[in-house]
Image (cartoon, rainbow, N blue to C red; front, side):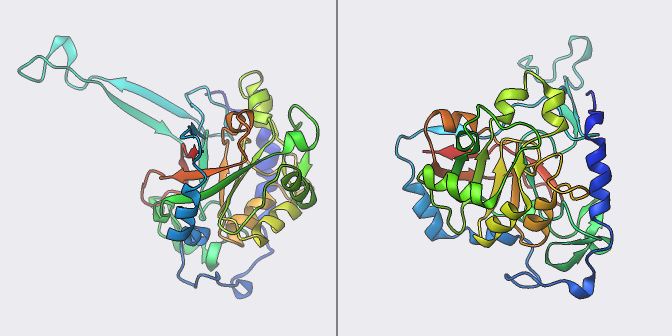
Length: 315
C-alpha cells in the first residue's frame, strides 16, 4: 500500500495534544462506575432494541461498511496484505478421498482501516484513557488488558443520518469544513430528525462518495468533520456512537491549531462514546432515509483497540 505522507502533520499534532493536560488526580470516574469498560454501550437496552425494530418499514438492508483491499487509502502507516493459499496441495496433491481441494486466506493488517470502530482504548490524553485507565496499566503489546473492543455487546438501536452536505447546500463538504453544534441542530430540525439518548448518529458529508475513488490521496489527506463544540453537544445528548462518511469524523485540518482529533478526546476518553469511521452513508441519503435500525456485531478479538466493521442499517 502507498502510504500518504500528507497526513503526517496531523500525527505530530496528535502527539502534542497528549502532552501534559490531564493527570490521574484530576480524573473523574465514569457515570457507569469506576470498573466500567463499555461506556455508552450500556445504553443498549431491551426497550431501545424493541423501539428500533419499529423503524423497519420497507424490509430493506444497507451495509454501512465499504469494501477494502491493499490499495485502500488509510491513516499512515496503516494498510493490509491478503494472500490466498492452498495448504499442502502443491503438485496436484489432494487431501481427501473424493479429491476435494480448498482455499484458505492469510491477512496481515491494521484494524483501523476502512470502515472501523474506534474503541475506548484508542485515544487518550497524557496517558489517561476512558474511566481513568492509565496506559501503563492496560496497554500491553499483546492486547489491551481493559477497554478492548471485544468487551462491547452488540450495538443495536436507533440510527439516524443527517445530511450535512444538504444543510450547507453543497454536493459535498470540502476538506477543512467543520460543522458546529448549531449546524447539527439546524440540520436535524430541517430534516425532521430528533437526536435522542442512545442513538447512533451518522453524518453524511459526501466526502467519501466524492473523493474515495476519484482522488484517494486527497480523501485520506484531509476531511470535513465535526467541530469541538459539536463533539461536546453530542456527548451532552448521551448518544451511543458518532460516525461519518469520513475516515476520522473530526475535521482535518483541525478547527484549532495543535488540537487535531479533539472530538476523539471528548467522545472516547471523556464520555465513553464510540466512533464509527468511513460509514457508507450515501445510499441511505439517496434513499431518503433519516432513521433506521442500526445493528453492529463486531468481531470479538480480545484486546483490540479498533476493529474493521460492517454495520447494517435496516429500514
